[in-house]
Length: 239
Image (tube, rainbow, N blue to C red; front, side, top):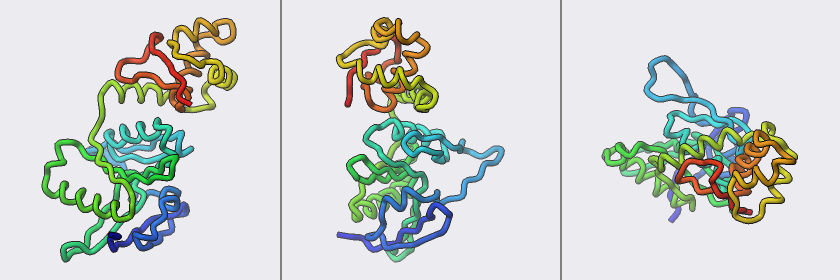
């Protein structure tokens, strides 16, 4: 059953619009500006900042290091086609009172599926007020046909590897010829070191390895991320 509610958001120029929840269009929401105004001050509890997203083709804001971690994973995921932070404010009457909620991220998949992400430390999930707010948000988004995700972290090795790979997300900072040739020539399961040896006559290691890591970042190759990346890491074609 569709839940009655309102979605308020800012477009790319900062103009505020409000629509019925049932009519909220994820494409418009993800193209807008963050709902909240972000401020930085000395002594604040969380580390906020801007992250350049290869998926979004621009900067996406985050309010904590935990949010940055989820943002990195979304940017790395080839199934994510669009990312927005603090994308809107949803409000509705519930239990005799007005409720409001601003999610942390809005993700649109390559298949068009919409996911709303709330990032919370695991230790806060049992707090009654937090559990109640997230439970209500889940009902709201489910009524719109959107997936709701509560994210509290992932394995340290995976996150460390994705952070490392993020250094190679900028297409303008790797050799385009190496990316093109390696992306077409590497077909079977092979280690990074073996590719570097095979193409040593064409691309020195300082050119070859960044190109390979860029190809892992953009999803052309898969690699096991539950152990540190190295020359022994095996690459497999993903697309």
